[in-house]
Length: 352
Ligand SMILES: [Fe+2]
Image 1 (cartoon, rainbow, N blue to C red):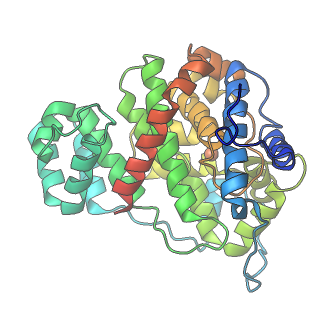
Image 2: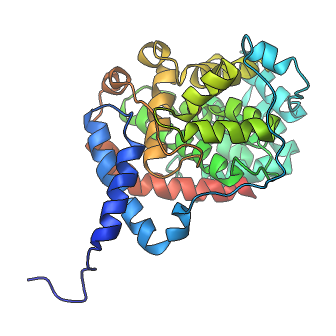
């Protein structure tokens, strides 16, 4: 017997609105066991939010002084970047990190020295090492210890990912909510790492860094011109569109190829370039492990509510990519409490 007052009464009007919202969210997703379990999870979350935070579902408004975009399609990322757009320069510490990660002669001491010289970086590395991401809770007291316990590769990727995220400045952008962008990037990194562990791909920390950086190109596009950002937002709300398709239509290329292009210019590790460049590429997501994991993690992150707030539709998940990982939707669902906790912890650490 249900005890009155214990189980909340279902509100049919909200239930119907939540079902409509989730139907739209997944309308281009295709079918797989992952989509089935994520839909259920998304419905529970949307229903809860519609009850407790209904403002989240109000139509967005934009300042009316945004200049309309007057650009047109270009041949590709190279031409887009050759205009007036100024890319952020890489911080010196990032260049040093990449150099030692690329150099087979580098030692643990070289890595510790770079981390120690940057107080913000050493604080972030310590807090991340103890965050539960590596199951080392509370054991790491100095950057040297972090590098010793995690090893050169893991600690190096962690440091590189941390510094990279600082490239995404959080000044106000009227269309792209930068807090949402950070959360989406972190969520994609955490989910990518967790599914890489489940799929026994080895070297899971590189998938974390890949997830953190995968939408770099999207950030660059939305920061480049407010009028363009608004056009993309509007088109991404039209029937049959998602953000990726809207970019393709307005610009002639998409944020994935732009992100890969930039990371390549910045001489990032090959796997991080593949994660960004390939995460929407139909061939790469089936064949390249970094593109595959990032593609799936990006989808899961959005389904769980860590979306960018730009399009009401998530887009497509490649069934072959998902099946090749050899894990089940239920395995992902079991990890959700841990995934959500890690995302919140890491967001707090990196936000400081
Ligand atoms: Fe993307």
